[in-house]
Image (cartoon, rainbow, N blue to C red; front, side, top):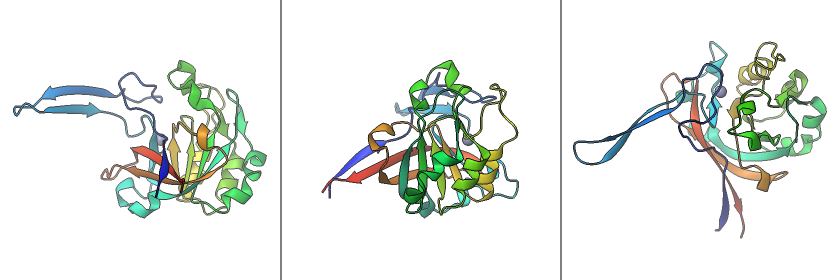
Length: 218
Ligand SMILES: [Zn+2]
């Protein structure tokens, strides 16, 4: 069988844009006594393309290490919900994809904000999900909601943040959240087989994740 593969994760590198309060990612190459190259890496569990476990905001929520691998593979609908800076994703935006969302395990939302990656405004002017739209996402049998922004909730700096509503409603329903997706444009409107395995971090509230989709071509 032949597939086209799509890489939906950003590159992990020093200097990449980071969320509020994160220590920036740092790499230090070391030459081992054996002559091999090894690297000491410091990063936040919510840096770059990453997945939020329920424990991120729900005190008795499950941690990333305890979620079985089959949770992280399934079929994703790629929703084309293009938005401008600080523009919200509405109930009707999600509702218009109901037929697609009935059939899938994951909902990946492309607002187009992925194109701002690397700009300072990426971290705070991004589009976000309104409470009623987040609520509607819990009505399907979706296990993961992904988005091409820093967060489904607006940034604190934007002045629009009132609590953590989208995070709370999704994570309380055991719907995990992938933030900072990229590369969704070629698969807009499609259903694609998707793999997004996190690191098995003990008591982890989240983890970097390599998100990959594939389409069967024959
Ligand atoms: Zn996160």
